[in-house]
Image (cartoon, rainbow, N blue to C red; front, side):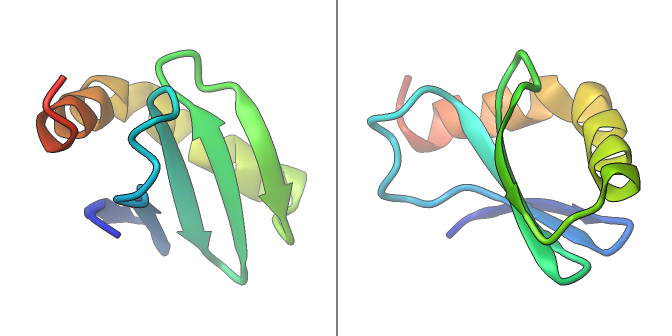
Length: 78
C-alpha cells in the first residue's frame, strides 16, 4: 500500500493490487476512510467521515491531483 503523502492527519494511499482500476486514491485517518476518483475528485465511497472532513479531503485532493496521478502512473507503468 504505497503512501503518496500525509497531511492534516490523513494518509493518502493506493493499494498495489488495484492497478486494473482507473486512477483513484484512498484516504485513511481521523477514524475513517474514503475513496475518490482522480482527476475528477469524485467520491466513490466513504466510511465514518463527516461532511467537514470530506470537504477538507476534497480541498487537499484538488491541490494535489497532479502529484497523485504522477505517482499512480509511475507505479503502474502507464
